[in-house]
Image 1 (cartoon, rainbow, N blue to C red):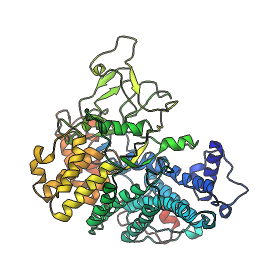
Image 2: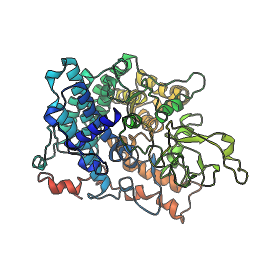
Image 3: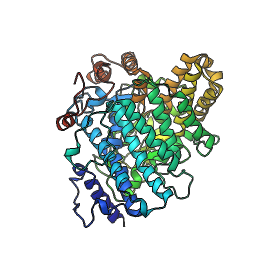
Image 4: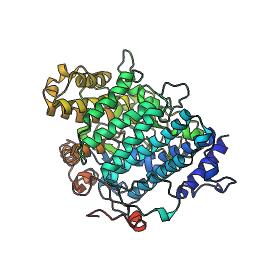
Length: 558
């Protein structure tokens, strides 16, 4: 059955215009049925929806682009290879011909085209009205998510709401950002009305649901309230967050007596145990692999704890440590914050099989730990030296039959309940020109899960006025939501990206281990050095798209 589903999905991808992603597959797309004969029962509809999810799990979307590469180049972390500039977008060295610029655009529009085809071809007469609307709602949720990424990263973009069959449909001028955001809101509102709640027995983990739609609506409204649109939608943010909070089913993962709720929640992504109470929506690499679909999740392989042993072979929890955390990120945590040691790893596994402590932010192994594939079996090994001819034991956290050297099955969070609480707190502060009691309560809920005391007791100045509380939210979102693909867009909407990059470079140069003549250390400064406020708050249009769309003119400066 899995093989049949796999072949059906590939055929749908081909029909939807995504043939380039399927060149390596030994699949014949021709079949005895066409688009107009498909979408006539629940099985076919589910297959088509799985095809959209599979595109979101490719390298060019959540597999590595949105989750890792696009997110690099902030006060959260940066690309650390001194001898190349492969992660061009994070280094602000990209051009309009850059593959990352092109592939994100192409894959998002391919997903949108599949959603549009689904909306057009789903046979209403074949379903009860409730089921018909639920299926449409899932496709519109995914389309809204894709357009949200497009408008965030590229600004004004062509708003394609009909199935594009061939190149003759390609010529379409970009719509203003406001219009695109309004379409995203419309799609997500429809989704929030018709999707299953995650507590519905019919709901399948890893798929869109009612509260995920409300959570994304809150995020969209928060973005619309900031740069560059700067409309006031803070009350809309409050209302969407209140729907989730007052519903009462979702909440923070708590761990009685040990303050390890944060760690245990992220282990659920690593181990593929869906923690639906806190995770409103996640990209499910494990579910798609179970269907037999090859997906490209590199979560924990590119941005995980360094593991060099094994000679680059499958069977080991390899992590290539390409992404460094910054000194100012490390310094953002209070001493007792349980998130620090989880988010920022302080160890590595060497080629010789030795677990070594990493204490310097200038070390190339000073890496994120949030999506770690492994941990030491014995933590004292960080300071021990193994006997000659032996290796120190480690524990694999990923739950798969065979470990891949390149890909992981670690799921990636799109929206969590903790984010809902912080979005509410931020919006309430803006509306009230200072923190409300609820804003403080919800911030404290996030802090207390991390083992910290009430902010009014430990940091009373942070709640003294609007500015202080806003600055606390800026820092708290870094501590709580780091490496979840949110930081760069947060800094852009706050108009703080350039400021935080300058602060990051200052923290690097001010680190006691920084050596100005060390080429590797100087390479850490590239993102801050190359960033241009006039160019890098959005991506250029891909040069290939400008060439084939007569209505799409390149942005000034590109």
